Image (tube, rainbow, N blue to C red; front, side, top):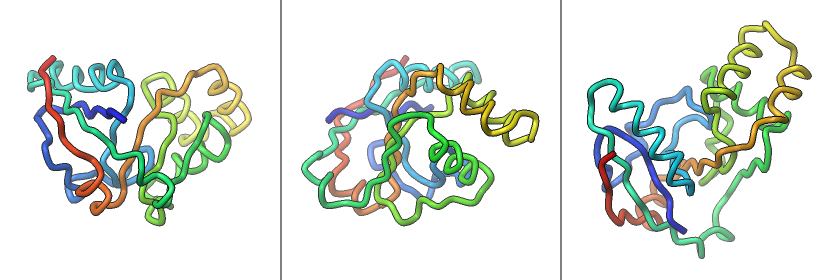
Length: 158
């Protein structure tokens, strides 16, 4: 499987020690199978007058049945509860090697922030999220899995 990571620099050897804690799925190396999503993410750096680079990886899918995976197929109540905990610094994801699920993009993030700030209730949040199509992200949480099964295959500048 081909995965992409948008950044301001080429990342040939992803390292979890550079990850931030309060992200969708907590500390991890975030990738996507959607090239356009990685391109869009990297363009945020260009707006800050930094380089806009997308790194490309081959992920060895043969490992899938042998690792601990948490997968969210939609913006569900379970996804919402998990992301809110992670974004507020209370990650539950340390027991997983890989978490797969929707990204809190700009539209989703705005709804999520209204919920976190107690401006809308959970049911209204879920109602709004049902109209959003998830952009899938793969959050690698295990450095050994990254080192042995996620292989850098090149990069390009936007």
